[in-house]
Image 1: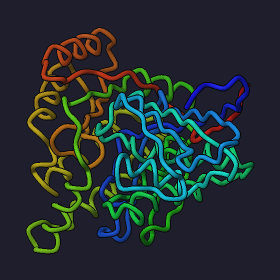
Image 2: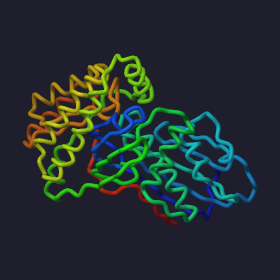
Image 3: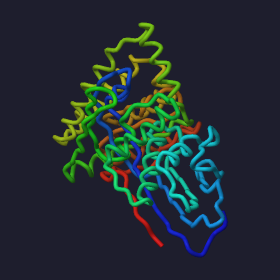
Image 4: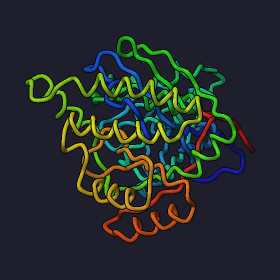
Amino acid sequence: MKERKSFQLIHGRAPLRINDIGGWTDTWFARQGKVQNLAVGPPVEVQIRVWPNSKKIKRRVRIIAENYGHSFSFDPEKPSPQPHPLLQQAVNLAGVPQGLRLEIAIFSPVPPGMSTGTSASVCVALIGALLYLQGKSIKPKKLASLAHSVETERLKQQCGIQDQLCAAYGGPLFIQMDRYPESRVIKLRLRPEVKAELERRLVLICLGKPHLSTRLHEKIIHRLEKGEASSLPLRKMACLAEKAWQALGRGDLVTYGEIMIENNEWQRRLGADLISAQAEEVISLARKFGARGWKVNGAGGEGGSLTILASADDNLRRKMIEAIAALGGGIRPLPIYLSSEGFFAWSSC
């Protein structure tokens, strides 16, 4: 699509999700559960350039997937399986007004497949920005539901509800799912000093390569159905989510870190392969430098990422980060900050 002198510019952004205490319990096979997670920035960014479609071009949406280094055009009324079906289906669901051509640039500060809810954040930001373009206001819960439907209904993927809710609302968040996929959401308001301390000590570690959560979900579902895995870890992790919510409310980061570790161990009992060798190596270093908590993000398994609650001692925290960065193999810290803001859209000239 050639640059035109006059166009409208729409922006949308949504935070990512880390440290999901109670993760796995927000799924259809858990039926009910509780999750306490943290929304973080930098956010996923969507930018939409809008022109009149004066030539009546059918493939009138061009996607620039910056993290993948390529772009493609398609007909928003007729999404195809490739490339990037998630993006095509999200655009189709939100709709593109007749008579318009769009160029949509999408960027995530965290690489895809890092178990930080990136696909959910992209979907929330993309759908929300397109609805904003059409002058439609939407509440966070409905926006999260639409984004969730893209992955589960249109693409038939295994997906819990927490990532979309975190992207739409911001956080920290407490989610109670009484019956899948219905939920009650409470946004936590941390005292300024608690937020500052938590943000200072949180460290996000990339474990070297991306992973596919759908495959892990399918594996665990199979184990549960065959009786090869117990549902006890799901119940225990749901209880830990409520305890984490209470600990944050008190500003008790010591207990919060202990809950992270306990959740990690229950996730291991759900499936030993959910805690990878790379995660174990990073955890060993974190423990050596006095970290007070650690947990694999999202579904876990090979690749993805790990959240660490570092020591309160700045020197130990810095030494820990240096030691982890020296491991190599793509293992590295990723910069983050807490985000109380969920999805947000605006326009510029």
